[in-house]
Image 1 (cartoon, rainbow, N blue to C red):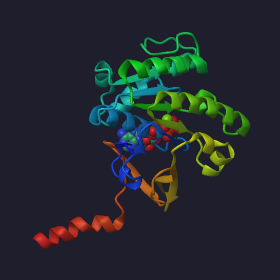
Image 2 (cartoon, protein in one colour; image 1 turned 30 degrees about the vertical axis):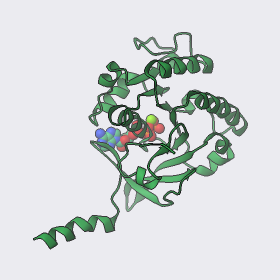
Image 3 (cartoon, rainbow, N blue to C red; image 1 turned 90 degrees about the horizontal axis):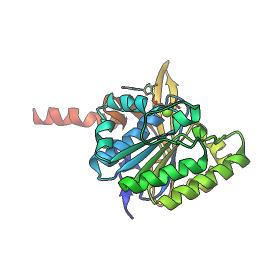
Image 4 (cartoon, rainbow, N blue to C red; image 1 turned 180 degrees about the horizontal axis):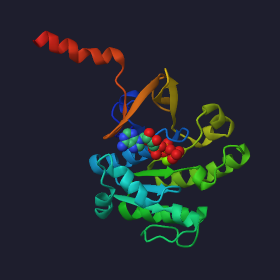
Length: 252
Ligand SMILES: Nc1ncnc2c1ncn2[C@@H]1O[C@H](COP(=O)(O)OP(=O)(O)OP(=O)(O)O)[C@@H](O)[C@H]1O
Ligand SMILES: [Mg+2]
């Protein structure tokens, strides 16, 4: 089984080497938990380091903002776009009814079939191996309406299945129980990762939980994560942190 390395330091070790190639993983969490950054890191790493071109479908953030968000972490999307290793599909402008000078957008208006067509074309054009959709609620998927969610997810799932790319789909829900009620299980063929924020002694702490990852054993722990100027990484746990100190003492 071939794995697509995520590019998130520390994560691949927790999930048996990466996402199963061609599968779909749902990345969920409330606002500000780092979902978009995770998506950018997955796509950028793939294109830059693992020879896997990718498509980013943005439904809420305009491409210009995404590029500058990515640049904070040293990820030059523009450069990879020019090299035909990344395509950003601007569905945000068409959704908001705003004009755009982006090359990849939904000229005929915002709907699922136009979006699907544009995604097909983009995947074909650069032989994409990865796809990020940011986000499901931008697609109009409402988790408060389980029956609707099931239909929408079925259509999106069918599209992703056709494309044969490793997909990361972003959703806003923080509570996996809500996701199960909404029938996400049927759609998420491979995995579900939940990002969250929790308050520890008055300080917000970032967490990552692998709720489900098929065809592999995976960590069942809530891992702390950090966002640095290099992007997201899994925090080093306390016992591991002690090792370098012990080593220094020994060599002195
Ligand atoms: N350069 C940076 N260094 C450290 N942390 C950063 C940096 N840039 C952004 N962040 C953190 O990342 C958060 C935003 O992450 P991101 O945009 O990925 O969240 P999100 O889960 O996509 O949110 P939303 O659901 O609102 O789109 C910010 O609130 C901030 O805490
Ligand atoms: Mg976001």
